[in-house]
Structures are given as C-alpha cells and as structure tokens.
Image (cartoon, rainbow, N blue to C red; front, side, top):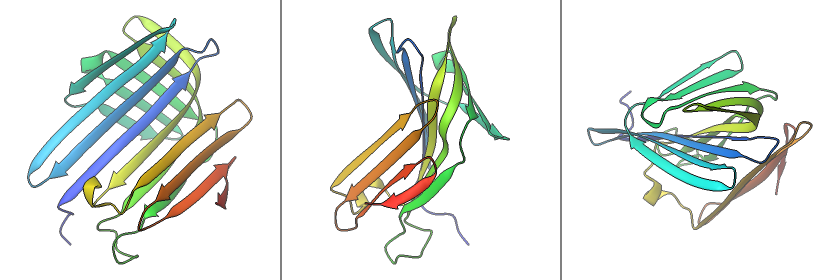
Length: 183
C-alpha cells in the first residue's frame, strides 16, 4: 500500500497557570508532492504581555506512558504534559467514500486534561493544559468544510471539548469528562 500523497500532522498544546499566564504551542509537519516541511509556533500571554514567535524547522515530541515531552529548540521551549484523563479520538471526516483512511481527518485528543510544565527560556510555567493531534490525509482546501467551531475547557475536576463541523459533510459533538454526546 502506497503512502498518501498528502499528509499534514498538526499538534496543538496549551497551558494556563493559576495566575492566568497562557502558553499555546503549535507544531506541524507537511508531506506533499515530495515536499517536507516542519513548523512550530509559540503564542504566550505572560504578565499581560502577548507575544508570538514561529520557526520553520524540526521539533521533537516524545509520547510514553501518559507523558508527552516537547522540545522546540529554535524557539527555546521545552514542555511536559502529564495526562490526568483518558485520551479520546474521532475520525471527524471519514473520507470521500465514508470508509477510506485516505483522504480523512483524524482528531486525537491525547490529553483532554493534563498537568503541564513549560520552560520558556529561563522562565518556567506550571498549570493545567490540553494536547491534541490532527492528521489530515486530504489537503485542507479539499475538505468539505464551510465552518468549524472548536473549543476546550479544563479545570482541576472537569474537561469539555466540542467540535462543530459544518459544510457538505457535517458532524458535531461534545465530550465531557470522557462521555461523548452528538450535538
């Protein structure tokens, strides 16, 4: 079986401290028509000052036993997410024929609720967080999508995630503490 001609793997991870400081990290790898590119972005709001930095280049993500470690050397970021809830996943778009893994959108919420430690240069932040991975084997411009609403909420006792995909293909669901409900 030949690999898909298009593959985009995008990671999203965040951390919010008790003081309200926030870190959001995006990492992505694209494979398409012989092209391979890696990208990462850091968005932070610390002490009421928002900053954003991006990098084209390799990053490292290591997953094992409910722990995910992240290194973005060019952005001087290291982090560790420790799971506090079971992972959930959904094929949010199952492909043009409804069954094929080629041309699909797989959403994996690896850590809907996590304890997080993030090192930004010399500064360390700790708090609650969230971590997901999205794998597309269909170019985004070919997805049957007009509107996407996505969100998440994390507290020490609860977590909620929602996805509302609207277009020629629709799906909408929410997950509260691991219990999925179609909307």
